Picture 1 (tube, rainbow, N blue to C red):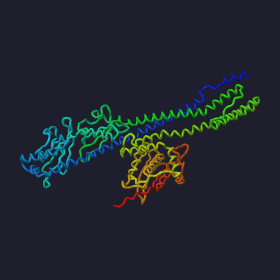
Picture 2: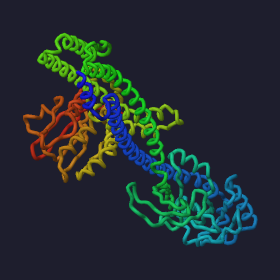
Picture 3: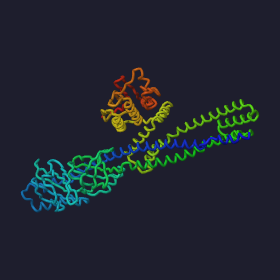
Picture 4: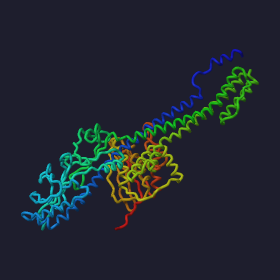
Length: 615
């Protein structure tokens, strides 16, 4: 017995103890998963944020062009009374206007000047370009275009292009004067763009980015700021991931910008909004930082919990190991407490029983071997229990993905500031994209809710064309990236269904994604809709592999996928079509399919139609 102690000591296993290895390895796995989740989430958020920003800038350019076009009527309303003035007409038809008439007309022209029209010049012209009366700056002639270059028109208000003079940009508005249907003269006003820094700040707030607002002639001959300062045109166009970028040092020093243009109806002008490329991704980096902070906190909390839980498992094992080592040295009086989990207590009880038997019959080697084998099986059961515990913990890894939804909800609640209706729609798009990222996990949850009849529906009147175009914006780039041809025939703008908007779009997105998944490169995906009696049919057609006739009904069953083989794996678990049909039927509709092998498939979503009342 005196030689057994040193032999045991020399055979003690080297390396890290189980007490440290379990939390360390689990923490490393958790760190890898969190890091991958943060990186993937950032990439998707960055892509969505860039798309939302550029789309919002383009929409603002169109709205600004509409606002400018609305001012055309205001210009004309101020000039129309003078075109009907008898004194003005008498002066135009006379060979030489009297001094009295010229004086009266000059006062009337001066009365056109408003409190903000400090640079306004008003003039009365004859048909041959001679000026009869003027009110305003006498130097207006300097740098002014010739009469042939200013469009006077014949029947309505005309507006000229921009022209620069002494670092300012001017333009002319003209209104014809007719008598008995004959053109006898023109009232003209020289105007200029005024500095409006508050308007630029308001638009920047609306867009959410630092933008520059410019105008230029339709022929791009003159570029000017919103305040009326001429600037050189942009140059050095270069294609990028978000569109074509330009150099414009006079507006954006040392950087490049995306330009979004919108023509102004009734004006020979174009609105141009420049978005610095440096502004893209700024908000996404802040989100990435927040993701990293939250993930770090989650990692620390998870590591601490894993450490505590692992100690609950390994502490009794450590005591049991110490008792076993003492027994190996010949001390058969060692016993362990029976506290701890079921497996640990069972192992302790087994150890105590083994110790008692060894103490009673340590000379019986066969009995000792049998008892040791029993202890080994008990230890394997405990290890298996440990594995089950770690598998259960993996379900909690959905939490980082749900953090995306949390940030969207924070913005929608107005904690970061009030949001308008357009921003609400943009946040809803981000919400839908985040829901799509949850993938298979969310599909199982939705299927469970539908099966338990716990799904909530918000039935309302939904315009079909707008819903189809929203779906097109989400999936068309991915479809084309797979080398497929995508087309949408368009719906009647007045066509409306009585359904849940979000769930209807979820069905359409799933059908489009399903068609792309089973269609080889070079194939086609088509989206169309039409009305039939009291329902609306939304059809998604692909030129994919097709489905055998005997399996057409099976594809709507849970956990069934068409053409699923080991050598041709498909994404998903076979719940997409099941969920889509259940959602359609829950909204009073249905989902059907027609298919031919080698030709393709057509899925038809049928929903109740909202009938418009007669006029």
